Length: 358
Ligand code: PMP
Image 1 (cartoon, rainbow, N blue to C red):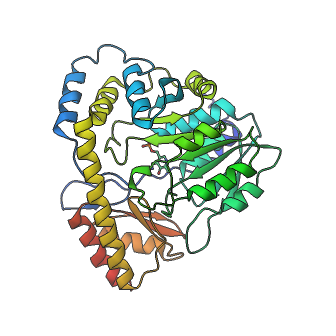
Image 2 (tube, rainbow, N blue to C red):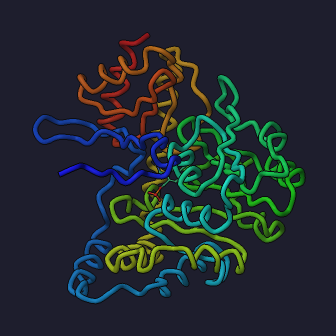
């Protein structure tokens, strides 16, 4: 029989691959510092909610996750009309772009940044316009990003803290940027690592959103809240835009188990405990970055749960050496290594390896 191939969209054939962090195999102890995950296991109260939720999975979940949306709105300081949940914030980003990008519209974003951005932009039919992050500091160059906005620009993505380099945008920088960007250009502020920020010059975006209806915030329960495996992310936006994002979202996109686990994580006692864990991870971040600087590394100021090494050409080899030493890290070939802050023993194992590279 003659083989017939259905052509893929040109944009799909050209997509870069999203390379997931390496997975730890069975057997010898391997520390997984490759995906910016939270190293703590789920809280007992979250496990109980999951077990209870599991008894109800013959039913569809609440399509718009009403109870969870109410809880997230209260958590964020907005109302339910402002909140849209999705299957991880990466799915919510795709829905945001699908809601506003017409074929060929320009989407400006920093580079290097989150590797899902070029994929999501291309899938939505947009044209990627990348602006390099600042050499050495790894900070977003917001004046250059504002200058890259043209009449064809529909969206700008601002990743703060920036994955994988680590620095966060200061509140005054973001104000200046928003004043320079036309009000009909959507500014997506991706705050996936917000809870790890300790720099007082950085503000969370809710206040901005009140004054700039062209801002949408992206948040996730994958990082600080430790639910990466359940896939819960959300957008916070003005009601009309939120309705548009909801309209293009995958129906029933957040599973029942994910909804109940997220609700259990937002309960006051659980949240207190989870945020204490974040504090412990920040203590580790301070210890690890201090030790690395003592080893002689010049590191960007990370406000997230990872550290960036702009190694350039030897990146792949260093990643292989780290994995040979039992620590999985995330290489971006020819550019640098991103290493998650994990449990103390994992961080110590990585520090021993980094010392051999000096
Ligand atoms: N934004 C940024 C900047 C990220 O680093 C990530 C996860 N790596 C996400 C969004 C997506 O997170 P999730 O889909 O798990 O919510």
